[in-house]
Image (cartoon, rainbow, N blue to C red):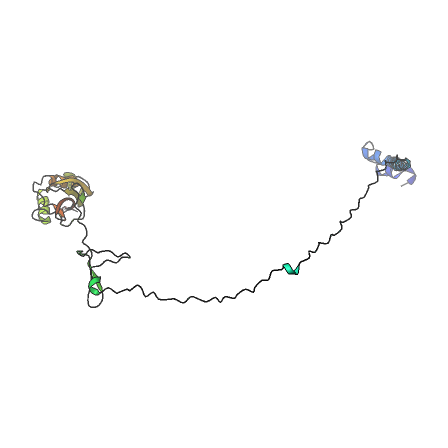
Length: 275
């Protein structure tokens, strides 16, 4: 390869490439652009240096002098010695020495003017305990009686008697209400009068029914309620039978007074040969 054919390295680099591309122009003008940038940089630095130089040469007008400050020095006041008063020895009053008193504790003295006597056992019986002397009540049932062992036996007062209400219905009484002939007679009467409900027979309904009612003061029955039922008309059948009873109950009593009370009757429904 003959080196004379190629004038520069750029011609060799872009021998078979597109020289109209921007990279070829940049490489061709590289020396020119670098020289131009260097000159502009040096000129800018020289300009800045000249500005600082001329600014330092300019003389600023002198500033107005501030007035001198006057300093005042405070002198402390002179100390004045207090005047001593002359005391005339003739005018001094003579003081006698104080007497010493011993702190003696007081001695208790028994007062013998008041005579106290202890009460006898007869005077204590039937008396009430109090901080005031007064006449007690002797006819009291709640009295304390002492025995030979020294223990006081106290009889409590009787509880007040409360008359029962005429309209309230009681669950707890002194004497329960009873059916003539007893509870077994009532069950036998209900079993004899019972007609097994047709629907219960068809469905095979069995079980126990609880019916609650009120036994009035005159022995009549009222206020029938179902406490436990099995359905299919069994509860209605028991209530129907109870309403047909003509016999009067023996009413309940509280403190000897006839009162209204509750009564719960269990009735069993059972089918024979039922599978």
